[in-house]
Length: 239
Length: 105
Image 1 (cartoon, rainbow over the protein chains, first blue to last red):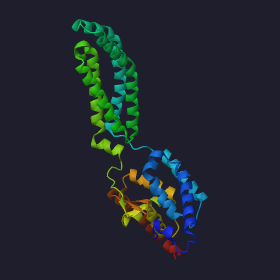
Image 2 (cartoon, chains in turn yellow, blue):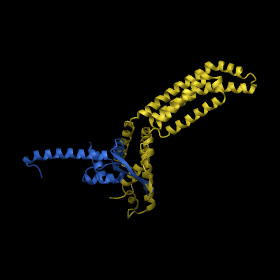
Image 3 (cartoon, rainbow over the protein chains, first blue to last red):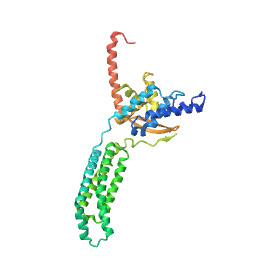
Image 4 (cartoon, each protein chain N blue to C red):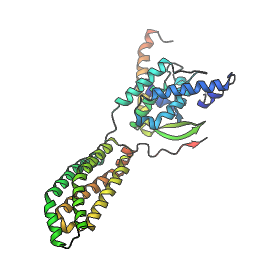
């Protein structure tokens, strides 16, 4: 059997530069056709299928044949239409929790908006000697919560979508997001939110628990197979 | 099971092979009758991997090109054995009934 690499050194090639030019052209043409495949599939398989296509090519072939092109287009269509692997229950539950997180986040925004007046009163009651700068900081903080909340809710939904699709970056992204909301909760605790704004703090704590549960679920071993079906693949060896 | 799938699994039954090796082996097994194209092969390989019938054995970079070797999983071996037995039984039945007609070469 002939090895793919052997085709590039067939004796009798009249001009190595010309042969190399033909191969480069052919490779570009094949890459254009492979662009029809889903990006996720190309990421893991393009170089491999390209090696096979080049190995199957005739000497000095410059363009893919009609039949090979049709075959690639048919393959691309099948890849687009193939059923996605079933989501494990843990991932389904995590995605549901993330959607719930988006709803709860909006609940937190509503809580902040409704309780803003009582928070300000509570701050004044506990700390009447507040400077103008400190008071201004509290008002800014509450405003940022009200404006940032809907954005964070959208982030919850976006991460739910990414995790439901099994993108390999979805889990690290959610971990970073969870770290962000954890820091937010810790800062709020440090600023005495438990005293001034107990309702907001309870809502944020519930949200944090939802995030923790979702993160635990997406990092289970079963979920790992869904995100990285080729996780056990060894590193390619150089020859 | 489609013939191409059967032949791919048969090619892998003798050991791990890369994409081009499978194409060449399938042609040899079928006496040149089945000429797999890369698009068809990789559609089949993708489906077989999803179904757990084959797995990636190892990867190599040869002359700056990725070469991935596939191997039959135990489930793939069992399915191939069952399919081969079924085909053999069918062929035996057909040959038995054709025998009196004297059309066998």
